[in-house]
Image 1 (cartoon, rainbow, N blue to C red):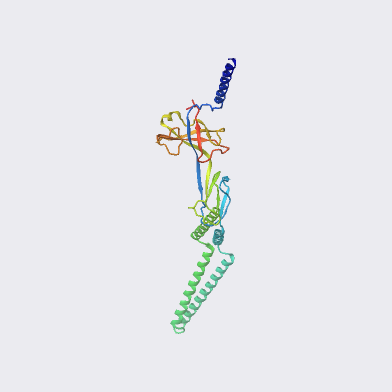
Image 2 (tube, helix red, strand yellow):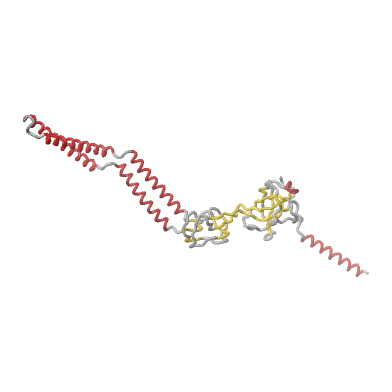
Length: 333
């Protein structure tokens, strides 16, 4: 009898210890609201602005890149020649403007003065010839020189006077220098050349593709030797910050959530190391439950999309990964 009692006591003790062990191993009941969703983040497609052949790509799938890091280069040969040509044209226009601003050289002014003196001497000589012929005719009663010779001398005087006037105007132009309109035109041409040169240098700089943000290369869509264009992305980058979990909440539980509420986000890969999060967005429009959403009941119902922003410095959560979001009971609202 005693042996039976001892056996029953031993069985009861073992059952009690087993129950205690089972209860200790069970995870504590979660208080508060639990949602299920998937990790989401922003992505960016990178393409060259130019249309040249790719000569180098510096990143592969899965590599982390920093903002400003060089990811690829296009062939610069043709554009480098265009830059050299534009630079030479700009130098020519600069010399033209400099020549106009400097005006005539002293030697050119002296040459114009000498031409004016020569023209005046010709004019004076032609006048003397005409006066001599007219005086001879006056003394001889009009029979010393023919009227044709007198008319020819008068014509030569007018020609010499016109030449002297032209030389005088030429000297005046030399002294006055170029017109303001000519200087403005030369300056405008120089500015146009400078703008063209700056544009070509800008295009030359854009032959280098740089990462605009910190991120991870999701895919490399072209390879060296391919022809690039602004319409053909070369890389697809995933931006790690910000990162959020897209989940859905039923209308009956919508009143439990307020923007800014603290949350804990865990995944099947790291269930023991949840990351901190906060409720950042609640949709104002209801929708039917997407087929990919994980909910406790799979029946179709109206739900509201929410986004829980997470702080994930160790990059535990990846794009598309299923995640569990837990809001503490009595969280501030």
